[in-house]
Length: 500
Image (cartoon, rainbow, N blue to C red):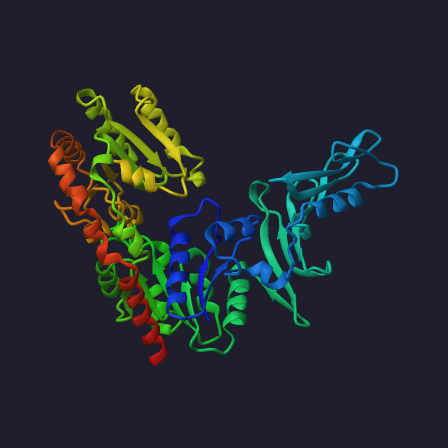
């Protein structure tokens, strides 16, 4: 069995997790067993599996030990609610049980299903919160008087405790995880942190099968756990972005990747996988290994590459950007260029597809929206948000624009080219130069050169023939990322593992 390791699969699926799903299809085609492994709890797991068409192909660390037989029947929630609200001496009102007018039990819902139940004391403090997942109590949080978490325990279908997280007080009332207990197969295991717990879990998964492959798609989730594993499975780290802080091959290696050279030397890591051959070569030099492979993170199907998309349906002046609203994407470069262009080409519009980086409290998203508002550009610059299917956007736009500081592959560029959409992009590491046939299917311009960006977009608007030429060649440029080509690269890596 082969395992693709990540944090979790979300409904707003990121490029990394979409790449995992694509990889599953390749492994299925090659008749090689594979599964996605997630390390964070996800209440949307059933909806995600249905959306991505991967039912039974995602294994979560908690579900592995809990073995809950989930029930897709909302009526079971009502029986649970009726039972918990039937408290002697309490009255039921608005999904709450009240005693002497004070709430002692409160039921909460999410997406029409029972989500969690709070149990409060006479002073209004929440002592306990039971979480439910499709009709089963999945875990309980316990709190102290300041509302700080002190313990979390996960259950199996019999209500037996399988996993306990213990917390102690930390600065700013933030709890610190100090101990994890796992009760499994008649033993009680103890771990000081999540890294040890994950390593134990991965060892259990691979057992004594040396042909198993563990592929880390999220370095912050799996890389440290690899160092603590005891089983002999092969382990690979995928670079979904540049491995340096500035995207330059000779730049400072990102902190999360600094242990890699030592891990390779100790046999804790078997090799590296990059989305482009150029990055694979750069990684081989920086980490001093001959086990560095270039395998695209995605592919295009034959149907996508042969679909006829009339150039006539492309709207002159309609530009798109497909990127999350984060600083590294430098979307302000595009916005400023579009604002300048609009003065002479009033038909120009920009649609930005992507979700905000919530980890920085949407600072970048708010700044971008303020920039648009300050320039009174709301009528022609739109923040569309996350979209599952961008086919229509790619097939009607005059061009897609990419202005990232650096990339690992730039999946949106390949998707655009596959839909016959020209791309104007900064010539950055890594991806654009590998995907775009410069001056044939799009245009590569010097990184961070905002004047060159403006001039190139202006040239497209003033020269319809050039825009048509780029559109005509776009799908041809994407041919090198067809399904069979990418599958062949994975087959070669799998064969190398089998030969060792």
